[in-house]
Each structure stands twice: as C-alpha cells, then as structure tokens.
Image (cartoon, rainbow, N blue to C red; front, side):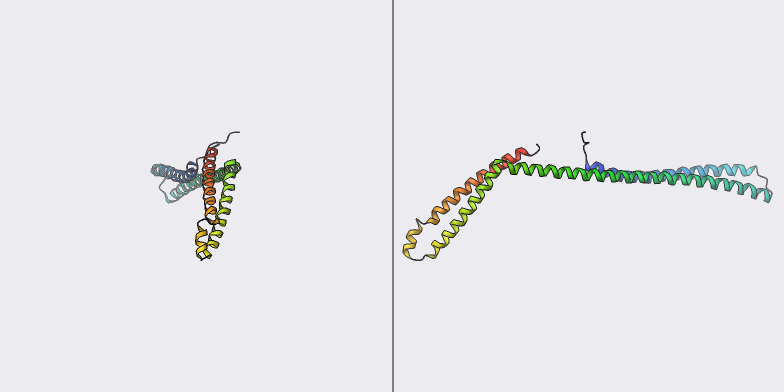
Length: 198
C-alpha cells in the first residue's frame, strides 16, 4: 500500500484552520438564532395587536408566548452546543491524526538516514579512508617522537645527522600517507554522494 505524501506545513495549518472554522461556525449559529429571535419577536409584536388588553388575558398570553419561546431557545441552544462540541471533537481528532502522521514521517526519515549512513560506511572507499587515516595518524606520531629525540641532541654531530635523520624520512612517509588519506576521503565522499536518494 503506497503511503500518501505528507506535507508537514499543510498538515500543521489544517488544525489551525479547523479551530478557526469552529469559531466561525459558532458565530454564524449565534447570529442565526439572534435573527430568528428577532423575527419571532416581531411576530410577537404583531400578535400583541390582537390581544385582549385586560390584565389577566395579557398576562396569560405573554406567559404562554414567553414559555414557548424559552423552550424553543433552549432546544436551539442545546443543538448549537452539540454541533460546536462535535466540531471541536472532530478538530481534535484531526490534530491528533496529523501529529501521528508527523511522528510517523519523522520515524521514516530517521530510518532512511540510518540506512544511508550504513550504506556509506560499508562502501570500500570509506573503509580505505579509515585505514589510511589510521596509518597517517600512526606515522605522524612516529615522526613527532623522532623529531623530539633529534631535537634533544645538541652536539654538532647531531646537527650533521639531523639532515639524514629518521625524523626527516618519517615526515616524508607521513606526508605520503596523508595524501593517500585525502585521496581516499575524496573517493569516499563521491561514492557516498551517489548513494544519497537511493
């Protein structure tokens, strides 16, 4: 089963848009109820014109109308609250799903990176670079040790031998090993670059 492409920017903004949509729907619902209430109130005003104006008759008619409107308003409010709660739950679910998708995408990227590094470490050019670097390091230590020994000798004879000293030949061997390491590193880099995206 092919996985759908995941655009984290798009998915992250979807949750924000859902929250804005919930707020917009709530405002729209309240406006509708206010408009309906005003329409009903206008109807009540028209009905008042036909009322019996005796105090007892007026009280009965007003109480009946108020009770009717109150029940209707409560029912509509409950419906609006249920709708808003449903939208919030849906938005929360989507945000949770987006977080799970982002976590899965991150895990997939980690596995892909580990695989790439493993392939690069196994390639022959990388192994050759590692071996060359160890040889160069060893030769550099030898050169340093021999140079220190030669420097300690302070007689004239030591100065003559310094021109043909082991430190000089060791330094040359170190330079040669360093060149080999650099060459192997360049090849390992080139080979590693070819593995990226595979």
